[in-house]
Length: 409
Image 1 (tube, rainbow, N blue to C red):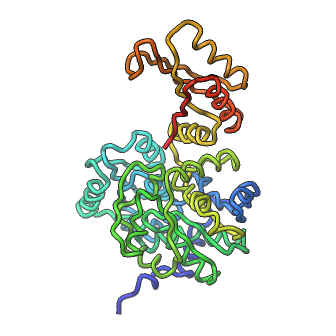
Image 2 (image 1 turned 180 degrees about the vertical axis):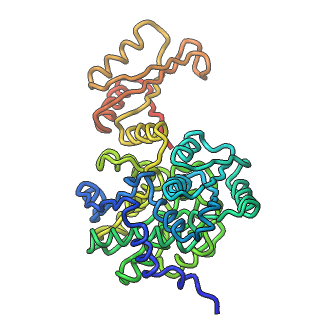
């Protein structure tokens, strides 16, 4: 009689994984966030997996899988298809253990990810235009070269390694009554849900996916939903969830929530501003779900995994500036003026009177539907808060100016 998926991932296999990887991965802290708790109305505990050497929890599962290899498998080496944190975790621990690691990535993979993987010991092969192309090529090389394939999530030993996150979290914060965990392929949540069901059977276990990639949500709920788009949470932007992990999640997880890009951006920004910690979009998904559903989580003691911190610095800068714009501290005001001397000067005086700082000014005379003697001026400015900005806009409108704020999506 063949084993069921739930027989392959148990509290015992996760405890064994914890002993196996002990000392080779960082035992990251779990800390209470007073300010985030005040903002959300829940008691928020954060597990800082972005403090791993490769800045992501993926090291745990990759190392546990490597330590299960036979001597012959170690000698031949392993292969994976990944352009994310799995590639770095597998490469880093493979080099440390003397196991050759080949990573197949699609050709459009950003150069920085290729360089990061190579810097920790991985041999990168670029193939195809999509992840599916890279995955198929990795499977081909696996057979041709006699390598061992290490899946990023859909494998019991990998999921067991990821489950060690929950063992540490529950040890540091024993009074939690809910965990909210990101889902890509489902490896992390499978492991954490297994620990929760064994140690805290009454705990509510919630998964989170980006609205643009609701693959596990659709699979569990029996729906057909499109997956696609540029999500900030690229680490969980998975079109096809794991078969093994989906069966674990269906049995051991209470619910899955979807979060919009706005909340993902807000969560990344809050974690940097309040906790002074850099988290990628996928790593902020748990907090995003709590922010988006305050009534659901009010008064609960919630554990959140900051599962990764690998975010492009330019993208992070954009996220922070967009958050300032949404809060009213940064704005672009579009003002219709007459094209005559002194018009702009009079507008500047209004900004000065309200102590609002001007950052950039853009004049538009040609590409406009206004008469030839009219112009549109866009002024990017910085205010103390939304109230100060609203006061400026109201004052200008009372003086006859046509003022509109350029809104973000």
